[in-house]
Image (tube, rainbow, N blue to C red; front, top):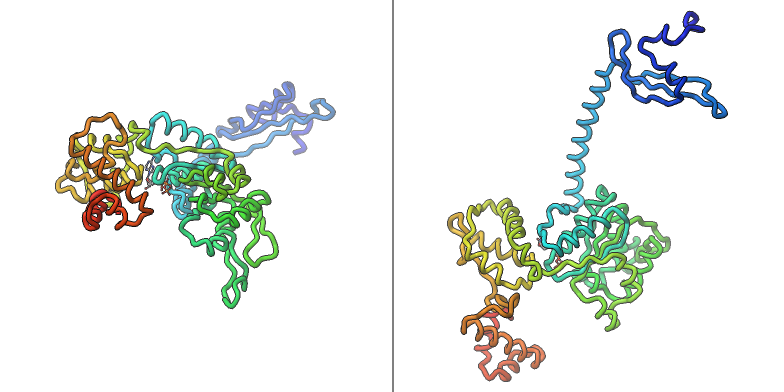
Length: 409
Ligand SMILES: Nc1ncnc2c1ncn2[C@@H]1O[C@H](COP(=O)(O)OP(=O)(O)OP(=O)(O)O)[C@@H](O)[C@H]1O
């Protein structure tokens, strides 16, 4: 140490640039420097006092660049492992779909996907509306998976499937002894389970009014109170709500709270029905068949052109879910590896709704008219079938046969 004091740095350290930094005042971080035949990683940092450069500090981070290469290799491996665990965790947590898996490049779908992608990374509440089977849940998954909450839980609650009497405790949990006579232990609700993640409130339009009020408070206060509980529990949850019902109509009917609607409707995603995006059909069929071949082990090598004709003419009242079901049935009906028209079974009377101007055979026209007449009679009879048969002027058994034929039973 003694013998270096007072000597110029260039006499002491090989290939040094300390004196240059002392002149320029510009720090040099992680620079490669060759010393005694070895490459090292060095940083040179100028020190200022009252705006005046007074010293330069030099440090060697790696004595040998090979150490750095080893570190880089370790980081690479860790990154790969992390990606693997992220994938596994995501599968376990339930958010299995990503935007890339949402098939459909029609302009309308692209618009919806772009909007959803844009909003995914914020904590914005999203309201997804669209007919049943259009892919609302898929979008909710993809938004979660593209957000900074992706490592957190994704919890879905179907508000229509849970009896009203249980929904409150399902959503908000309950404290020990909350239910009289029951020695049940307390339980976390879905909101608590979704902490640091996303909750999907599916079929929100079916939530009873009293719970809508409680939900509104939860969204405003960002805390939940368990049934029978006395202390609020803070929660950090992103909310996505979805419905196939017309919420504005429900508001007019007094069945949905307007203030809750505005709380949820921060960003609205409208998923178009399949019949309005015929351009997506081919991409959807390919994507769904790929999934189905994987799950069923059956293989389609060829699709007969007649199949496309049927699929294009059909109006898809059940949207993509129905398309998936039709394809799955077709796959099981197939004998070889070629998908043919005879394997596809769709309701004949829903065939031409997509294009009312499409020419029909006489039989098809008659069937359409018959189906329409039956629907009207049933509506007029308030669902009473013998009465509907009387209106139609046919026997009860005749009506039952036709209900079966048209899938109306
Ligand atoms: N764009 C798409 N690409 C691939 N698969 C899709 C697409 N849209 C929907 N599906 C498939 O269709 C089925 C129904 O989708 P999903 O459950 O998301 O519909 P939904 O709108 O939430 O229906 P519901 O309102 O009845 O709950 C699922 O099997 C989903 O994988």
